[in-house]
Image (cartoon, rainbow, N blue to C red; front, side, top):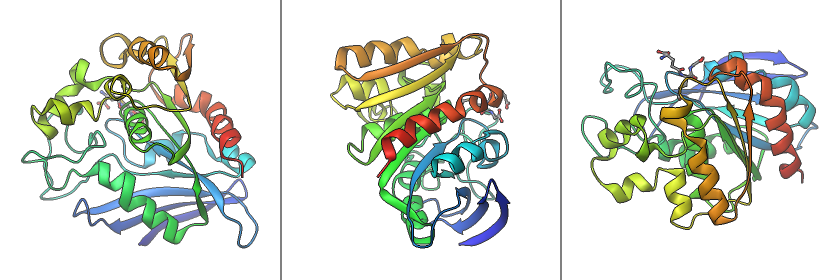
Length: 276
Ligand SMILES: N[C@@H](CCC(=O)N[C@@H](CSC=O)C(=O)NCC(=O)O)C(=O)O
């Protein structure tokens, strides 16, 4: 693992790192913020999965999480959203291909084998972070924005007990029911069973559960009606008895001005559930 950059921030350390990923077969870059802590102390970790067109840098530069992470003593890890580089498939559209991995292990050409973001965020990166950073892997939370919210919800729903806390910012809650789901068609083919395992509303309908969940959604989000559709998650959680706190935020759109505004609330949500 190579350190790309390391800066002191809010008494802690903001780093950017690169490694040769086994599962994607490419170099992958991610960021880690480690708050100030005692020698030998291990801290809870929050995984932040980013959205379409993002790298690790969008939330690292614009997410405004460091003050809250320092206050709550929570490590935050931000991976990339797809493999990249020469020999890696791409698309002309911004909502498929590089920057749009949808946190699945693609089975279809030309996306397989490099597009293995499910294995990357659920297995390879957690093992690497646990090896190199002072994380307590018994105290993990997960969150994300948009496509990353989809990733956070599906990863948490399919790993019961691994994450003590789950939240999302303007998540894609039912990709199989919206136009952005064309990426699942491309990556997974017409295997509806496989696609349902990457759709939070479908997973809940099929019996997956969470203890509770915080979702923030701007009501001026241009993707709200066609792509995000939080009412589908609200109905699924109601039917399943999942304690969803869905907060519609007046006047907020889909960007990082929205994400950063409510980031401290999400950190507080996670910290309250991650305390030792
Ligand atoms: N079409 C634009 C905007 C794409 C966009 O809004 N991407 C969002 C996530 S959308 C679902 O995952 C985003 O996080 N953008 C990065 C940012 O820093 O705002 C385009 O072509 O970029």
